[in-house]
Amino acid sequence: MSVRSDETFPERASVDYDSCVARVLHIEDDPHSRRLVSKLLLRAGHEVFETESGLEGIRMARRVQPELVLVDINVPDLDGYEVTLRLRSMRELDGVPIVAITAEGDRQTSLAVGANGFVTKPIDARRFAEQVAGFLRGHRESADETGETKLREQSQRIVEHLERKVVELAAANERLEELARLRREFLQNVSHELATPMTPVVGYLKLLLDEELGPLTDLQRKCLGSIERSTRRLRSVTDTLLDVSALESGRMHYFERDYDFADVARRALAQVRESLPDERLTWRIGAMEGPLPGRGDPDKLRRAIVHVLDNAAKFTPRGGTIAVEVARVGAWHELRVADGGPGIAPNAQERIFEPFYQVDGSVTRAHGGVGLGLAFARRVTEALGGQIELVSPPNAPVVGEQLGGTLVKLRLPASGA
Image 1 (cartoon, one colour):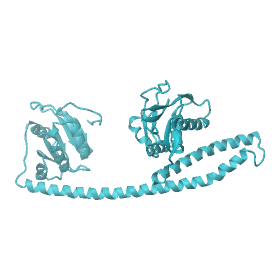
Image 2: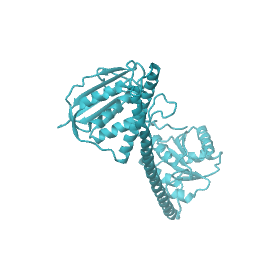
Image 3: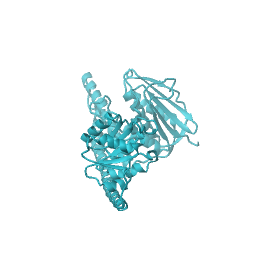
C-alpha cells in the first residue's frame, strides 16, 4: 500500500496487542523484498505502507504515524542507521519499535543508534509474521557493552557522509552558477544577433509599404503586409529577449520622471488592441481617467503592462472577454486585468513569473511565446517599487465581469503617497 503526499491519517492509537494488528511502515529499496514483506504482513492483517528511500521514509513516518517501522540498512540517500537516528528523535514515534531488516548491516550498530530489533535477510517467511508480532507485544533487543563504541563509530561515519555531501553540494552550486553565467551570455549574444539584421528588414519594409521604392499591386501589398506583421512579432520577441538579458545582467537602466499611470495604461492598451483583429476578443474597459500621478520610468512601465495584456489576450479563446480597469487603491495605483482563459493551476501560479517557464512548454502547445513576458513585467514592476499579483480564478469582478480565467494586479506607489 502506498501513500499519497496529500493524505492525512488519524493520530497513532494504542496497538491491539491481543490481535497484533498494526500500521507498519516498511522502508526498503528492493522491490522484491517489499513485495514479500507486504504479502506476509497483509496476510497477518496488518496495514502496510511502503517507501524506497530514507528521506521519504522519514516524511511518511510523520504522516502515517506507524505502530512499527521496518527499515533496510542499505536504502539510498540516508542509510538505515541515519534513518533510525532521525526516527528515534521524533516525539510522535516515542515507544514505536524500529526493526532493522538487512543482509549486511551490523546488529550492534543498529541497536546502538536506536533500533529495537534486527532481522537478517533473507527473511524466514515462516517465522517473520511472528517476529513482527513479538516486537508489537513488547519484545526488545538491546546493545551489549560494545554499543557505545559502535554508536561513536557510526556518528563518525555520519559526519564523514555529511562532509562529502557538503563538498558535492558546493561543487554543484559552482556548476550551477557557471551555467547561469553561460545562459546570460548566450541570451545576450543571441538577442543581439537577432536584433542586428532586424533593423534593415524593418526599414526596407516601411519603404516598400510607403511605396517610396515604386508603386505596389494589391497582391504585393497583401504579401508585404503579411511579412510586416510577422516581422513585428519577431521584433517583439527580440526586444523582450534584449530586455530580459539586460535585467539578468544588471544592465537595465531606469529613468526618473513624472508620469500619469492612467495615461500609460491607456497607451499600452491601445498598442495591444491595435495588433489584434477587432473580432478576436471582447474588451471590457473600465474608467481610465487621470491624473494618477506617479514617478519612475513610464516607458518600462508601458512595456510591462503590454506584456500583461498580451498574455491575457494570448490565453483567451476567440470570442472571449478581457476586462481591464485602473484605480487608486490607498497609496497605490492599480491595474487589474482579468481574462476568460483556462486559468493557471495552483502549483504553476508562482513559477509563471520565472523567465522561460511556460505551463505547456512543448512545441505542440496551443499558445505561442517564449515565456518571458510576465517575467519582464514582474522584474520591472518590482524595480519601480511596485508589486504584481496573480489570482486564478479571479476572486473579484473587474468592470462588473466575473471571469473564470486569471486576474493579474499590477500596482505602483502613487506619487506623493
